[in-house]
Each structure stands twice: as C-alpha cells, then as structure tokens.
Length: 414
Image (tube, rainbow, N blue to C red):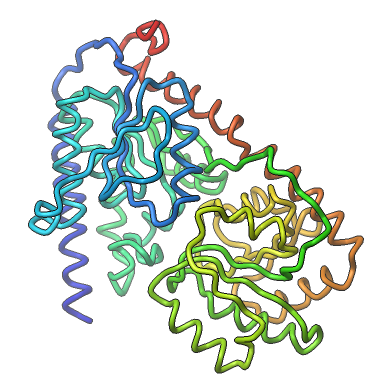
C-alpha cells in the first residue's frame, strides 16, 4: 500500500511539474495569428457508450468542421468525428496515458486543430495543455468530476491517480491548481465547481456545460414495471452496495419490488454475491452494459444515485428526461438539476433510512410520483437537451478560438 501511494505521489508531481514547465516555457513565446481550421482535438477515456455520445455529439454539432478524438480504441461513429488511436505496442511501452499524450502531438501536427481538450485534469487535460502550448493553440480542461479532481491532490477523485494518495497533499493540490490556471477554457458541470474556480482567481474562461440528453424521448407514465434503477459503472465511488441495501429495506414494505442495475465494472461479481447475501437476488436484475439505456429508463419509476462524489451525472439527466423520478445523494452538482421535493429528492449521503423513506413515499403515492415525474422531465430538457448543450459549446468554442487566433472561426470556415 505504501509503495502504491508513493508511486502515485511521484507520478502526479512529475506529470503536473512537467506540464507546468512546458506550459510556462511555451507561454514565453509570442503566439502568432492563424486561420482556424475548424478542428478541435479531444482526448479522454469513455467507459460507456451513453456517456461518450452525450458529450461528443454536441461537440460535433457545435459548428466545428471535425472533432479529432484521441482514444484507446474507436467508439460508435458520429458524423464529423475522427478517431485517432495509438498502436497497442506503444501503449504497452509508455502506458495508455503516455501513448495518448504522444499521439496528441502527432495528431496536432497532422490535423492542425484550433483547440486541444482533455477530460479530467490528469492525465487527459494535462496532455491537452502540453500539446496545445507546444503547438501554440488554446487548451480546454473538462472538469468532469468537479473540484475533487484538485482538492487534496485529487484524493477523493477515487477513479483517478489522486485517489491512491492515501492522504491529502497540499503540494499536489497547489500544483494542480497552477495547471488549471494555464487553460484558456475550463468547462465544469455545475455552479458549485464554477464558484470554486472563480474564488481561486482562474484567469481563463469558465463555462457550465453538462453532457446532453435526448429531449425528444417520449415519456410515458404507464407500463413502468421497474421500481428502482441504478445506471453506471460498478466501481467503489458509486457505492452500488448502498443501492442493494436500499432495495432490501424496501422489500420489507413492498415485497414484490423490482430493481435493475445497469452497468458493468470491477465490482459486478461482488455485487451479485452481496444481493444473494441480503436475500434479494430474485428482486434485482443485473443487466450489464447497455447501448440503449432508454429501453430501461422508460420502464422505470425511480432512479437512485448513491455516489460518494459526482460532477453532473449524465445518467441522472437521461433518467429525468425519460420521466424517472430521482432520489439521489446531495453531492457534487446534482442539486443544479434536482430540486428537493419538486422534481425528486436529495438525500444526505450514506443515509440508507432516508433513501428508503423517500422512495417508499413515491411508490405509495401515485399522484406525488406523477407530479415529480413531469417536473423531472421538464428540468432535464431545459438544462441538458442536446440543442441547449450544443449552443453552449458553439458560443464558448467560438469565443476562445477567435480570441486566441485573432480570427473569427466561422468567418474563416466560410
């Protein structure tokens, strides 16, 4: 354990230190005007197809000519999206993150993008910043998980390198914040993250842009034969065991409860065994990873989220757009979308009894569920519909690229 923590510390110090050095040295060079090509270069890791589609589709529709996506392997095709994947032998030699960082430079030389973008501070956004500064182009950091990617060195961003630190590091937190200040644009998922960065005197632009949902999905209130649903990766940060505990407690009052866990991940088999231990395996279906999650959502009554931390959950937005009522932990940016008692319920994190009470009240009061369902759908469409998200991207990308290049992106493309 000590070796793992020490390795994480050394790795983050090296990544942040090297990135800061590259960005600082490149910042001393005068930036020349250029004619925008209409291309942006993006890197990240996409664990499920819905998350990928919700984020990349509005980018591809935002008025850019092409999104160049540097990833491990090709995803579902989207118009105006090109996949650039490092060879597997390079990933084995340099690690997946190292291979993508090198390929950001190679793709940058070949395609001459106007902007470099990365999801999560380390390694994606660091790679984008270093490549962008080397090539004399602006960089965008997508703060996917919220301020936990920076606070304490990222110790509470459990799925990142910082999650292995073991204890908070003020040095790494300071280094991470210094990196964040080098970006021309930081995209966050909600107002809490924006307020946090504003208080830290970030020099670049800060924009609140969520993932997108299909607002045209037809929501029906009958034929909802799934009482509870969880959608997401089965990892420690999601605390799926709490979902199973909640379902078990509800069966004491509603014995025929039906629940679905949609997603895959390292804890899948552990969660199956846990459901058996609580004698609720017959009530819970483990559906695995779904390409078309809407098929489950339009048949679901209540969406449960028990995460330790979240940015703005795209699974939550998708569920609400389908008329599913959310009962979720009051963490991250979820309160931007969920209004307690109006379109769902916010619950004190880890409070299984409170989850149970709120869910039972919804299942036993049809009029309350219908009211919340209608309000949930309206909120998700207003906040996260793909047309709304596309317009936000269009405005922010044009502003950043035009300011950096000295030319209007749209005029250059016409």
